[in-house]
Image (tube, rainbow, N blue to C red; front, side):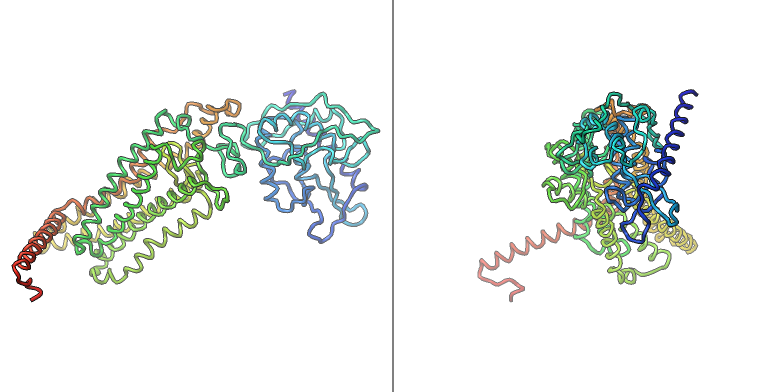
Length: 597
């Protein structure tokens, strides 16, 4: 309780000092409020970093001539890693006095006036004293915009914040707590020398290399130079997932197990899809509307399987598309002038995978619509086929729009264990918005339409039974079995895949924290469970489910009609060979073939 009381007293002192300084400097230093765009104005402080520093109203534009509040908030947030180090108890007071300078309005002189003041050089010296080492350990340098000689000195009689720069007062400042963030143990500088009253020599050395962005504090996870804003791992900006999958997954052989599983099932899917397209080319009459969308499902599965197959082969050959220089996974931020060849391959693979995945889902919905037209509305095949252009615009156009949006928002990234580039491997917002939601919506929409079609088929079955036509009933039973089996094989894997997406969305943060804890105990949260890692079995199962809907094509491939069509094809080829042989014999005997005569 005594500690809590001392903090309250200190905060009260801080607030009183601010109010006193406001009153004193209102007459000494003011800028009359005008209507010009660059005139200072008072705005409420909404940034969580600066809400507990003793003032609630800041000045815009600030001393960095920043007008946009979002820009100010983004730049202030870059100093979160430095806050986590607890380098100084006055760190936020100094930082917020620069980005959100204390603002006060009064009408002492009869007109509304805005008082703006800079932080004192002594406050900067105090923070610099204990924070410089932390900045250097984080891989940065002290920003030139924060060098202390730039600020007014209270000891020289210049107006500045906080007015009282006695060492005892600065030591009593309390580092505020940021919501949903652990309060670090802050340090205090007790040996900072004061400048001589007769000299203007700065007590703080300056740096020649400006830097306002803090880098990843873990060297093994540091993003490439100039690209730190592309990467984020847990709460650490500028950090990325290493391609060494042993530190991210719960198995040391993840980079072998997952690609092998992808290789096997993508080959099976590719073979099955090719058989499907071959069956269509042999006998196109079997795939007339309403079943024609099944053919386009096969085309998409060929492209999808080929992309996964290529990715798995590259990973097993120690050239994973998802890894930048075999060190960190790729996270797309296009356009980028310095993008590598492997980065281009990663983005192209991701585009192909996302487009074909969404296209299979959209064509599934189109297929259920054509079934609905045939069963519920009793449309003939010719009537359904008249709208083929609409089906193609929807089936190919809608996934294209989605893919363009995905590339535009730049959320393509790589996965360490599989080496597959897709969407949402590192960003859970991308996975939720662009992967999970569309998958669930398309599957559920198709199931609703399919259920209506099935109810219509059962109604037709009841009508045929009343006519005592056993042959038609048998044929309808086979049709129902085929339709139900196809829908089950297509929708069930996708629904299970959605469950896995939910599991990943719920646990991704913990997996990233586990990675941070393994590589740097100093950045491991106290409440984290360091034993939680991404399960390899789940990731491998996810890729199996990704291509497993291709098995629904078996309903059309494995049938007696397929064997008959293949038999007719072989018979036709044999007949043509025999006719060609007879024709060559006739020509040799000096007689012309019958079709030439």
